[in-house]
Image 1: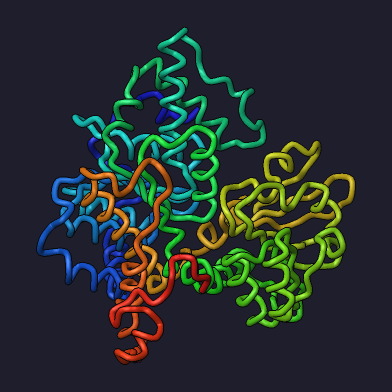
Image 2 (image 1 turned 90 degrees about the vertical axis):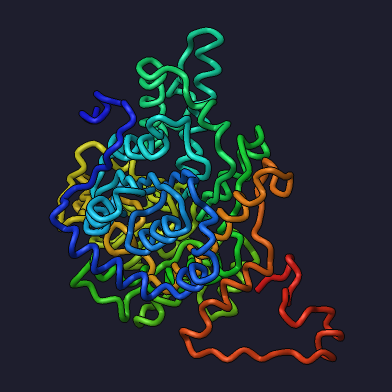
Length: 491
């Protein structure tokens, strides 16, 4: 158990790894903000009115330079921030130091690169607890992490108040190490801190979810038992899923591989991309661009057909597991690469996960193999050797998101679109807090705002947009200013 669990009092001062990195982080943040035309354009429109003045926002999202741009944008709109990273290995220590040193009057951060799972959940907990307040007004989430803590906390308080019982770890997947650790922390909290989760949830106007896998979790929860408060799906914005997921992964999937597996050539090698959704499409483009022979696996017939018509061989993993060199999981699911798959792979096959969490590659099961030898190659790169075969595989970022664990995630320009969407989602939730526009369900940003985010980025790329004539607009049934497509249109 982490020593941090010995004192679970909500902290007023944030925590980072190395405050001496503050000036390097400050320079990096300035450069990232200058590469964020969407956020800067939004500030030109909204900053003067301070629409988030006095609003408390908790965030659980990778603390990179790009996320710091989102945080400072929310600050400039009037919000006060408490923030943690949504992955134990994704925080940028220089950025964390800069936020702590230069923005501590309105931002409190709890993050560093290389957290243990216990430290990770402590950081999420601290980002959600507001000293002297019941909780945040708005939440930014990634992968449903912050919401899971609140939801399980509310369930526990209701159980404990009824009969003194606790959450039972046996009721949850034993190989889901993140959830197992969360349950232990929540059981400890109800004893030492009493009841506070239900009151915290009642203060939340709404939450904005960043990722595909997170929205999937929210949809499952919504169908099963409803939601505690309104959720806005940032991921359903076209300017998020078609840009961040495709073009961001095309860039960071290669960047992370170069850093984590430096010295290994991609050109001429066989790379298997598991999943051909938006993330898989970007990853496949990136590896093809480096000269790899890319093969795709899919469960969805539509995505499989897209991959085939894009020129990729669509195969079964079992048929190529012994011959391929690189395996990248892009699904947001679980068990896409099993221990048995890894046993059959050639020596030094390289595995990466760019989907979500650490269950796409069976890391928990792998670590239970008797006699397994683990050799650290460099931070974020480990060789796992099987005792019975004498062969082993190289796994990047401990099976978590290697584009963040081995690199810095997506570049600022593409994340500017995603985080402008995030900001607009938060503004929509807050401005409509006293009406029923957004209920306790999964909501989407209006199409006209999605198009506005795209417009914000055109000038920076010297894009000239054609203006339709009045006759053309009448024929198409649209307004000159948009929106130009129906909500159901598939871009």
